[in-house]
Image 1 (cartoon, rainbow, N blue to C red):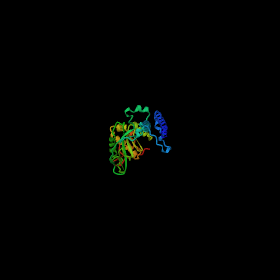
Image 2 (image 1 turned 180 degrees about the horizontal axis):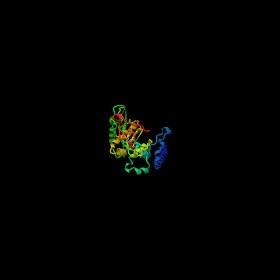
Image 3 (image 1 turned 30 degrees about the vertical axis):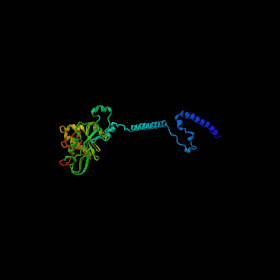
Image 4 (image 1 turned 90 degrees about the vertical axis):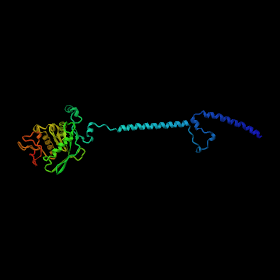
Length: 319
């Protein structure tokens, strides 16, 4: 009877083998994603707590790597685009000529605010080569000697307009020092001293400019002074010498240009030191240095100095 039982169970095993053989091809024919998620029944656990996570196939891993790489590339490209845009936004606007003139330039060079002429007037009156230099000055870079022996010190700088066909800043400075340091100039009485300071100094009390006729006229006009482009002038902190007068003087000083230059310096610096205009003292008398000699000597004779024979030489104040 045992044999009968054994015989009766044999068909059951054969049937199970056939069933499993038929099942495997079906599983292999499925897509990779389904195959990798499939867990045979005999390997399954009864609770999710003991379930093992599915193992990804090589193809799935490759897909995931490609997705991560693509996301990384997108982020990199976005960062580069945004960075380029930010750099473009931060680029400064190129300054115009006015801004460039007022910006701090190389030592010894500076621009002075000069009222702009109309474009037509500039084209007619200013040579093309000088247009970009009008109102731009070069400064003497060195420090001058102390002029005078006692008294308060008045410090000044010296500048020459770039468009002026004349002395260099250092040469102009030498003439200024020579004039103001003379014993007949403003230091004679021993109540004040004068000293030239370099362009880099920030303690200058005033500046002595040598400016073209046009620029000097415009500069003087900012203080309400009408010079007609002919005379020099003084504004608070600015002694402005007309370059045409510096080069040619006036008829009454014909043949004595160097003497006229000394007069012009002493006269305008005299204004900066607080002196007003004075009148001729009489026919044949030396003209006071504070007399407006550029408009004519009015019967007086030439004189470039405020002190004669060690005494202050002056005339009646001009009303």
